[in-house]
Length: 363
Ligand code: NDP
Ligand code: GDR
Image (cartoon, protein in one colour):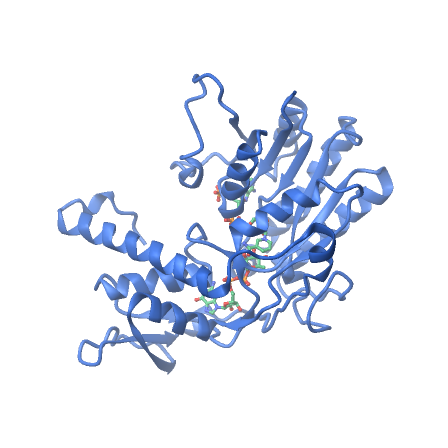
């Protein structure tokens, strides 16, 4: 039987790495698009990748960029994928306020470039397309919980760009009959989460504070509420969405909500620290050796020009049609992230104490 061929944009990111592993285990031939960078950016998929000269290699990487139509069209023509997962994005909400135009170019027009390539290359009947849509579309929420029919109200250049990508996906489905669908995914995390997203920032910092490598954890809005799931569970839904009779859009969420503050408290418990909260303003006191308390301080630098205060998903449609139920609970997610970051902090400390500091990545 011929293998199915999948193309993943954003394969070097959190979801891309989990999805690549998932599809390889399903017997797919997996192709990924990576950006040219001056340093290696394949840490998350190195365990899946073999020397291309080895026999039986099922993972192939191509240099390309969402802002470069020519590279996307060339790769799609070469690969002739059965499925494209468009996961690549400038995915940081706060950064999108600093780089709004680039964010629009990659996150909005990037999706259009891929859909146009499918159309121009005549792959409408062959290639199925998944767009990584987001709960950020709901922004200033119009309904609680949020479901597929809840009106959108984006609150950042990132979310506005993703709004375009959402609608162009729907439009190409309706206009050209492409099997194209949106997964409206709520926040999902893992030990592979980027270090500047709040969950990973918290578990990494608390682990380092526990081992004496960092003093204080500085955060922004502690009261933000999110519906956090595990990335490993969510990529399975991305694949399932492309295996249906007809393309549809789905909310993927746990239906459970927690605050940033709760995340900190729970992660603190996991690494063995009690938390002392400082008010707004930067506090340099750090870890309190007398009380054993870890200081978490609010630094207004991390506030956003417009905030999304609360998100809570209703995954009923995915439950019913895709058989969705998240495998990992919130507590299990925090435990796994804290445990992995404790191991990393121990490795980091060992290298530093052994005189190999230069092997450590700088902040
Ligand atoms: P990451 O930030 O971890 O990964 C983003 C990926 O996109 C990386 O591989 C990155 O490459 C790549 N990338 C960024 N810009 C470009 C570009 N111009 N051209 C080509 N590749 C590019 O994100 P996640 O894995 O967490 O998220 C995957 C997708 O899902 C994103 O689109 C995100 O917006 C969306 N999403 C994520 C949610 C979450 O909670 N994680 C929830 C809802 C939606 P490099 O490694 O070189 O930086
Ligand atoms: P989000 O994730 O913006 O929801 O986007 P992030 O983890 O960045 O923020 C979640 C909430 O925590 C608050 N917060 C902080 N955030 C960061 N990054 N750093 C801090 O120090 C901090 N302190 C408080 C934020 O204000 C926010 O309210 C993620 C991304 O993965 C998007 O790509 C994706 O679309 C959405 O999730 C769903």
